[in-house]
Image 1 (cartoon, one colour):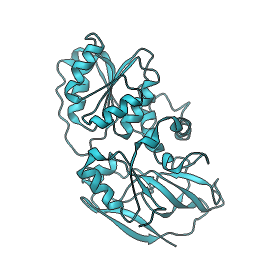
Image 2: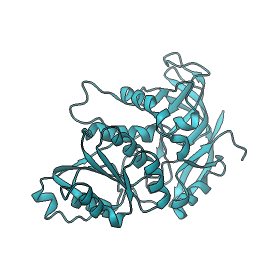
Image 3: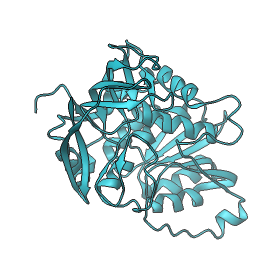
Image 4: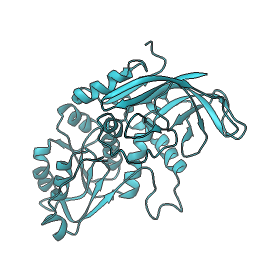
Length: 337
């Protein structure tokens, strides 16, 4: 068997390669893909060559290195074609796989890499589960208390999920994004206010009578937003950084706010569970929680474009050159090339 996979050959040079797909061993399964989602954060940093070449790929399903070429992505939904005797799936089961974009693939079964999908969950909606998992992990790292004022910087896909989760308990939620279309979406999805980056600090101070936010969430990948988050956060408040900045340098002015207000800056990274959670949480529990919430997170409104696998290189060019026109970009393996 052979499959077609998307590789990044060099900076801004994606291609489709044909490669062999072996029959599954005892602990492996073969999956026929239905849809996968382009990550507008990490994948675009790979596309632009913004990740240090020495960085570990992090997933055994990825290949190559960030020095290029590299096969890298992690949110795909498909149906099991065949499974080894030690795999708890059988032909016809629908699964989510942390695997790069590929139309037919064989991978090792691991409960942290492959998850059963509810039959009633739309497969395109299911491709968003990994990014919703990133947002849920952030909420586990920094819980939002009842009565908190929260300011969230960036309303991309992960930012939208963070904001919707935060809105479940926040007293007042302010979303910051430079794009008017995304601010409108934030208001429709439960934000109390949605403002431009230029208005963020004044809006937070006005909403809190000068006290500052209890929690600031930085999920825009903008270093300037991280600086504003520090300035907008109140005494002993928390700045939650979900963004991954890759190899870009980050320069911050920490005085006086960070020092005198005794801020905490917390990093949230989806590949590990925060300290103190491990006795009660594992990756499957976190993912099951995401699947329970996903139908209520307005995912269908997040899909802006669909591309066939053959045309997938055009998806990256579009996101790179015209990000304001894109949101959730799906690779549809059943679409005609």
